Length: 108
Ligand SMILES: [Zn+2]
Image 1 (tube, rainbow, N blue to C red):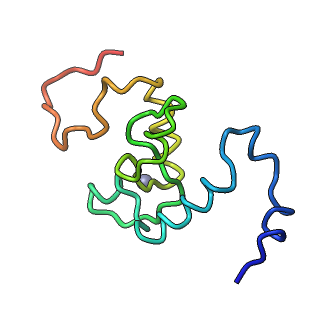
Image 2 (spheres, rainbow, N blue to C red):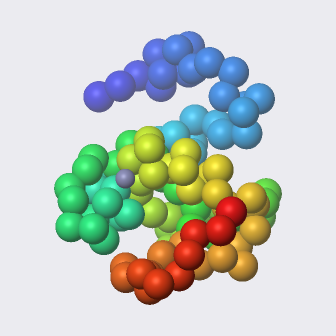
């Protein structure tokens, strides 16, 4: 059992980052039930998830933020990679095709 005031005292300025203690508790609870990174899992690799990611960017949408169906567990690496490639939009599908055509040249 943890005393709530003990938890409160230790809390940094989480409000400034947009996440408060309620989210951190919910995220931790979620990860207990979903302990594996879903992106690595698709590749058949077992990596512990440390972040709860929103599948669709919530953009401050309260209901979307708290909708567990919109959550997925990611490891730190996949989470930062997704954040970097996402650009805030969700026109791009989260899942990439497992097999890309080899003939296609990479032009970027
Ligand atoms: Zn991962």
